Length: 297
Image 1 (cartoon, rainbow, N blue to C red):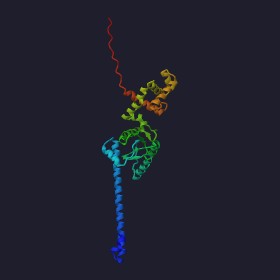
Image 2: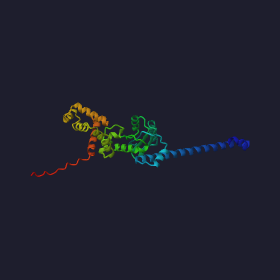
Image 3: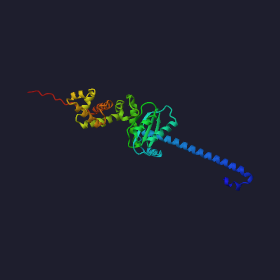
Image 4: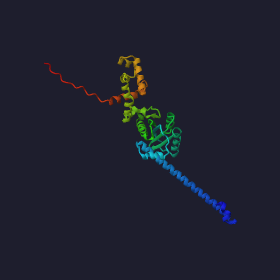
């Protein structure tokens, strides 16, 4: 428009017309910038609401087309290694805090969802490469208190199982005051069982007790005796009438079969909990039927 000023106005009016054109173009530019800013703000608010809906749906175990559509709309890309971290949230989490948390999560995971529900902070991570480093660094963003991460899930839609384990672990973590931070939900299986977590009970039976029974070779008997006699190799050997080296060998086999080492106090506690719930999972044997003695002729 400014280039056409000499054509449409006399020379005396051209300065004022140019000034009017410049003022108008500036107002248009400011108005356009305001529109774009409002659109970006609206998009950010929409993304935040959508993220909150997805987190809530995953925690509830929802598996619907609507959830898949929301996940796609949010631009989620990760295809493997999904896990959930839970812990205490700051009392008044600010927008800058959430932004910093997202930035940090983006360094260690392909994708991340952030959820704050009351005093709980939930992180849903996808495509984590270095899990040990990621969990340790991200735990620093949580408020004081235990931080628990669940087992890896095969897909984002299956992450509800990881979330349930993590929340169960968070509830039970206070029973282990010296637990590391963060701590795996699977490292809290005994505390979770005592607090009434059925999934933890099933895990101990399936992954520890039944493999020990299937391995046979006296592993269950040796482990039980070793734990009952105060973790003494010699006392166990005397009780079972075997050599102490035999006890050592069987306890090593227990570690090979289960992945838990009975020579370490904490892992021995996990194994003892597995023996207890495993024995209780076996239906009691019916008492042998007793027949009255026949009268002799």
